[in-house]
Image (cartoon, rainbow, N blue to C red; front, side):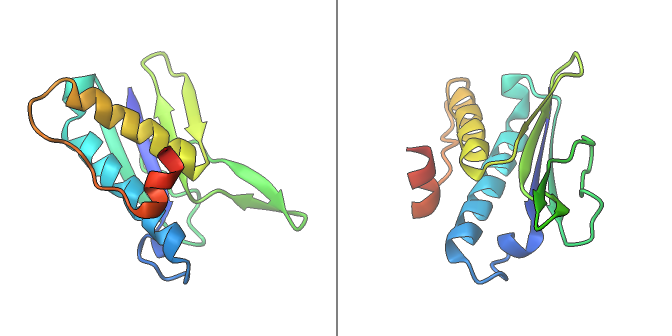
Length: 132
């Protein structure tokens, strides 16, 4: 199984002036980095983290799936999403931040059950609220 987290680089860096969204985006990246660090313990083949910017063609590093929506009569690509592909080629896409955090924190819980090390990731207040 492979995972790819895609996030808006500007949201991650806090450049959009929305501190709550920046905190949640940073939480997602912290969680994905922790999952990548211990991926072998839960049977993941690869974990990719991509920072996308406006104008990127979807920004995928490995899994070529892009979520889109219609906004103001135009197609808008989703810049934040978690894409999962299993060994049979089935793909799941989570475009909602609360779903992304839920999936990643569940992976961390699975890792915690496989090791004696503390793999906990400190979430922001906003991130904690989303997964509670």
